[in-house]
Amino acid sequence: MSTSIMRHPKGLYLLFFTEMWERFSYYGMRAMLILYLTKTAMEGGLGFDARQASLIYGFFTGFVYFTPLIGGWLADNYLGQRKSITIGGITMMIGQFCLAAKADPVFLSLGLFLLIIGNGFFKPNIAVIVGDLYKPDDPRKDSAYTIFYMGVNVGALIAPLITGYLAITYGYRWGFVAAGLGMMLGQICYNFLSNRFLGDLCKEPALKKDEDGNVEKEPLTKEEKDRTMVIFILVAFCIFFWAGFEQAGSSLTLYTDKYIDRNVLGFVIPTEWFQSVNPVFIILLAPLFSMFWGFLSKRGKNPSIPVKMAMGMILLGLGFVLMLGAVWQRGGDDASLLVKANLLWLLGTYLMHTMGELCLSPIGLSMVSKLSPVRLASLMMGVWMLSSFFANITAGFIASFFVSLGAMSIFAVIAVTSILLGLFLLAVSRWLTGKMHGVK
Image (tube, rainbow, N blue to C red; front, top):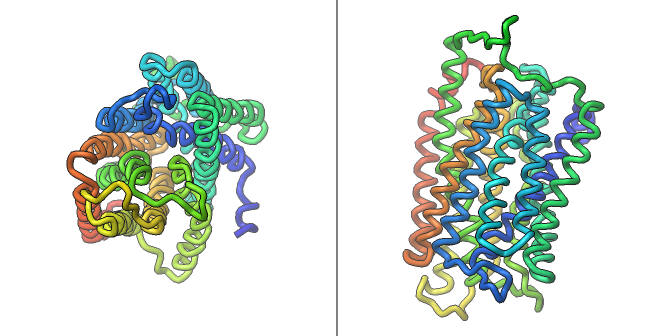
């Protein structure tokens, strides 16, 4: 593994580092957000009820994944990916500092708005540059996205530990300050080192222009249309995956805070720290998954992209089956608050969800890079992320009924839906693979 990693372009590691600090900023803020919204003013929060907070959380995390569609289009047509990343990074840094400025709905709104806008410029374009480091048929591309995805999760791992500690010890403001400083550090490194390690890659928009500056619009070929259709179909399935997966920051966090026994050898684990469990599993399991896919590929048995994604959805559903076990252990939703569920139920859920994520998310990034027409690369990466827009808003609505419907109903619906959709995707996977015209 280490030998193959060293053969990747140095630019990959700059992008790894830049994305790591951006994800530190985002996940550090996200780990605190639902608690910041629901805690009282005396506790340093804004005092929203759980339903309001879940809807705010859902719409915020949803629109974070809507704006990449716009940011990708602007990069393809006018800005280029490199400049877009700088615009997005600086905007998100300012957004974090707005959240830190004052515990007030106005600063909350401004901060979340800037984070949404900044992410639209940043998120799709850095993923596109990773793919553009390689030729279209370069076999290292899947591995590159796995390495890049580990950078995402290194940031996501350390962020809740640091921002959660600061929030508990000194107040939420200092957690947001740390998130802003992380974003600043990533941008400083990116802007000082990008010319050295990336050269002129992605500095200019991808669309061709004639001598008068007008865009040359070439029609898509039949293969390009089929491949683009596959992207849209898989995006539709991914909506349901992410709607369940993103319960980690809302209903699962609320359930953990109230109903999971977090006492380990006399130490009560802060709820925010559980946002680091998924990244820990990612970092541990990503190399194993990469080697496993390589092992199958050498023997001609590597599953197709749709099959891997179907496996991801089924694993997500099985994770929520474990959460049903936690509810049953407590004696149902009406059990006393003093009755806590075993921590292992929650850890098992995160393990299953992580395995599902590794079957779906890095595979999807690589898939979009391979299937997208070159002149629409950032736009299609934005379309891929659009699944998370719809999913996070859906997740917010689901979590908003957490109190009224109860955990058992919420977890059961997600489990059944995910498993059934995964089985359906398996059934149509051969047809989708045919429409990809040889892309593996």
